[in-house]
Amino acid sequence: MKTQRRPPLDHISGMRALLSGWIVLGHYCSFPPQEGVFTLLLGRGYVAVQGFIILSGFITHYAYHDARYDAWPAVLRFYAKRFGAILGSYYLFYALTAAWRVCFDWDGVVAHADSMLLSLVLCQAWLTGVPGRVSVPGGDDNYPNVPAWTLSTLAFSWLLFPLLQSWLRAASGATRLGWLPPLLLCLLLVLAPVPLRLLLHGGMGWATYGCAYHWPPFRVPDFAFGMCVAEALVRTRWGEALGRRAPRLFGRLADAIVPLFLLLVGVAHWPGEDGSWPNRAWSRLNFEPIWLTAAAPLFGLFLFASSCGDGGAFAGALRHPALSSLGELGFQVYLSHYLIMWAFLKLETAAPSLDILAGANASAAPALPPPPPPPPETADLAALFSLPPSGKGRFGHISYMMASLLCTYAVAGVVRSNVDEPLRLWLRRRLQASGPPEPAAWRGGGPPPLAK
Image 1 (cartoon, helix red, strand yellow):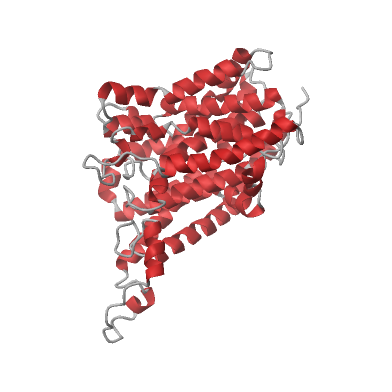
Image 2 (tube, rainbow, N blue to C red; image 1 turned 90 degrees about the vertical axis):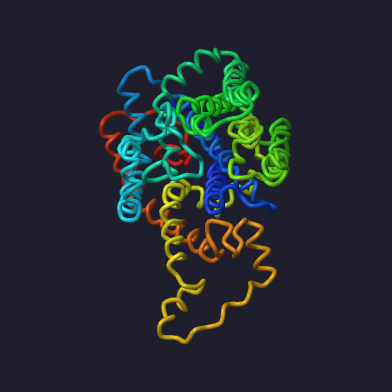
């Protein structure tokens, strides 16, 4: 069957760059975030995680929409492409973070041996569904590489993709609006469970929270919802209708969603029990856990609207080569940033002062008076991102945070060029030699971009 060429979605990489940067900066900040202008937004990194899962379902179905998985060889080829594109970086950083844990956290390695072993087969996220197992968001209970749990969660949805695609194709039928009932069903499955739990039980414990956040079966509806949005885009064909009135209106809609999203996610919150800024358990107090899934309609509508016609001004900005290039590193940045953050936190802790060179020469140089307080503009900048020099953030000084961030992107670029790309090209040659190529509508060669 000849594959129909559909327009490439060039803004997806830029969107992935913003989501990965959001998560990384959120991990750099304290938990919970201190009161500030942007700290609530950074503290809600679980919203960005949901965005990645929806994005993965969206782009996977858009890319493989015309593929048929009626026989095991086709299914196995899809698994080889999808998992082969991630395993290089995954196991590289597994080995590096495991070595770090053995050197600096042996007691944790022993206590979390089950997670260490299950991580070898991308199954560590299933531990959150085990009775009596408590997974605390922000804690280091996902061993050895904390953020790798997201890949474990997504792996289950990728395994189900051939079945989900067959179901979506059958449920949608042949009508132009056939995608609507499956989309509404998936949206209901995404939005309903958390509010029902909060209304019936008046709160959410850490175990339930971790299960709703990490447990692979619970996140399948997010992935399937992204698939339904892609099905709607393909069925309506508005993504191909560049210059027509309806797609232009969708572009304006996409632009309007962005400030609404920032207002809801970055400003609206429930205060702590005493009326103050949320305390240590802020992420599960009152109705805050709703944000584990509540942003799905905004993500879905933005993905659809920004993929129609010109996509609007914000989608145009996401297509900029700078953002697109950073987005291509999103997967490697996500897997590497915790290890590099640990290294710079260790460096900062070991340094006698904020000036590492002065600290190295402290024994040979006369004692210096304590450094003056930072100028107001520096203190304001640090406080804005919940990284005050007083040490309220994870990093005591913003300079270490910036060095860690730059190092993370540099390492990500090296790993992508020297590990993931060679592995992807080798796998592509092997698959081409083993049979005809699998139909795929994604332009650019190789598997489509992953939700990283």
